[in-house]
Length: 289
Ligand SMILES: [Zn+2]
Image 1: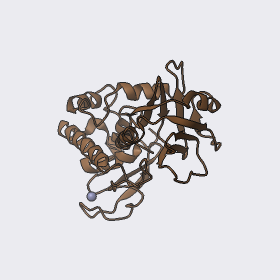
Image 2: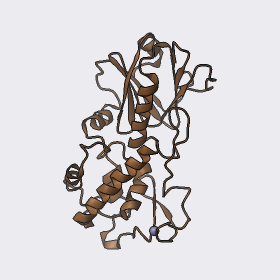
Image 3: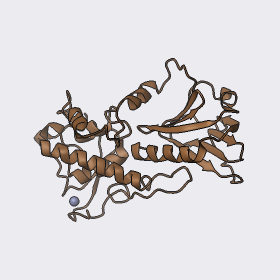
Image 4: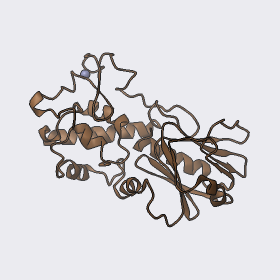
C-alpha cells in the first residue's frame, strides 16, 4: 500500500510523464474486481474522460489525484498505476486504462482493494469523501507546514496521552498517509516500542519521535519509495526497511538482539526488544485496545 512518501513520488512522476497528454480512449472496469470502488458507474467513464487533457497530479496522504479539465481522477492506496510507453504490451487485467494520442497508456489495477474515482466538479456525498477531505485539509506530513510545533499540538491533543505510539501515529487519520508500513522504521529510529503509551514519553522523546518521523519519510521519498512498492514505470523502489517480514528473526544492526513481530491493533508490529524496550506492564496498553 502506498503511503505519504510514495504517493508524493508517484504524483510527481505522473505530472512529469502525463501532463498535456490527450486521452483518446478510456476503459473502466474491464476486469471485474469486487473490491474496486468506483465513484459513479464505470460505464460512464469513457464518455467523461475521452478527449480530455491530463493536467497536474497531486498527493493527499496516501491518495493520488490527477486533474483532468474540471474533473479529478482520484486513486486511493491499493490502486496500482503503471505507465506504458507506445508499443508496450498491455496487461491482461486492469480496472482502468487510459490511452493517449501518442499510443502510450496509463493502466490501473487494484491489488486487494482500492478506489478509482472520476469526480465531476460537484460530487455530493461519495464514499471516500471524509478520508479525502481530511487528507486535503491537514498539512502533508513531509511539508514544512508539518513542523515540530504542529506535531507537538497533535501529540499533546486531547485523549492522546492514553493512546499507544502506534495508535497515535498510524490510526484514525491523525496523520494522513502515515500507515503501518512506514510506522515500523519511524519507531525503530526513535527507539520507542509501538505499544508505549504516549503519556509516558518525555518532551525530549516527543522531539526525537518527530525527527525520526521526518528523517524516515524524507529518506523513503529520496529513494523513490520502499522496496515493497513499485513506481509508475514498474521499477521496484529503493528504500530497504529496517523492520519488516524480511528481517524478523535477524539480529538488530544496532544492538544485536533478535528482531520481533507481534500482532497489534489490526496489523503486525515489528520491533527490536533491545532498542525498543517493551513498556512495563503497568504502562502497557491492553492488546484489545
Ligand atoms: Zn536493537
